[in-house]
Image 1 (tube, rainbow, N blue to C red):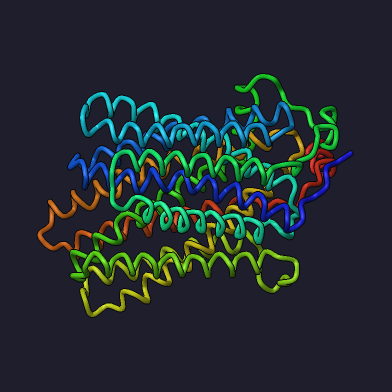
Image 2: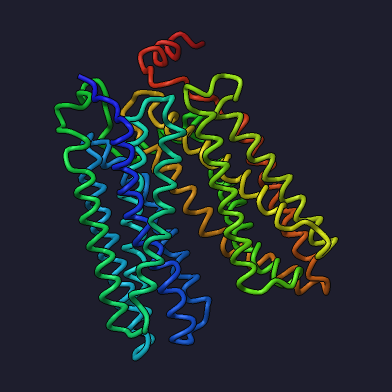
Length: 442
């Protein structure tokens, strides 16, 4: 007997889990980052390397997904991952405090803590996406992905606001209490949200109908040799690399070339995120059944979202050459609109492709794509900063230097659009028809 699809209440409950995950992560990426650089006067490179480490550890995502495939149960992996993430987040706060008195010991503990954070995100995030992919109707996937991501952003905002108010006035002890409170609250909310949601194992598709090999290497090799999965993996890496480069370069560019203050560049970043939210909602509406075929396919939104992102980055190339006369705010809003649309369409496509073959390897495929994204984010942070620094060192004109960086980024988005256009879209979870077509193929 196959498992029933989730309604909107089930999607909302998974969104609460994603918000809990985001609450812990944002504490490490923003608050601890600031404490290391400002209160402890440590080099900004240190938190950057620690964040890169937590992305690199997420190469383990395919293995985590395979583990959940074997048991056909995602809930234990989500809860276990959240426990690891919460403990790693609190340990990272302890390591940060320890850096104030013993930097070497604190940094050593931070390496362990950020590795646990990466493992926790890999286990919980991958299994959550697989659960969403396998238990949401195809026509609802874009809207479901948007709902979950908006709730994750809400988790960022609420945690940043509440934790920020509780941390004033700052003290190391207060930081530990706040980090522990956030971790416990996130874990408790996760367990409540997942209570009875997935159902017992016997309510899921029988293992005989969804075989999963016990050998992880064989499962990963099988997923990678599938042309559609391999092309989508490369697309995810290239598009997320382009996304992460522009995300880190934009604010310094606005400050150096347009003379904007830190507050103004922060507002500019907020404008970009607002555009991304609207783009997500548009793509979600296009992917829903009520929108009609005239809105196009998810693959179309993915491809043209990448093309629009490349064009918006082309506008930033012009901005670097023209200077303050360029309509920067409008350009940045269009960039956010484009990246938001392509990212949600890509996630919805990912959810459809994960189980299209019906071979029980949804977790491995989702983990493969998650690992590609994590590697792209780890590389993008370093590559974007290195490119901008190198160009500014080679060229005396900062505007021209950043224009060249944005040009490279735009080329990556064009490449991503070409890759996305070559990925055959999933028609829905019809494994019997899919396998029959494979048997008849020459």
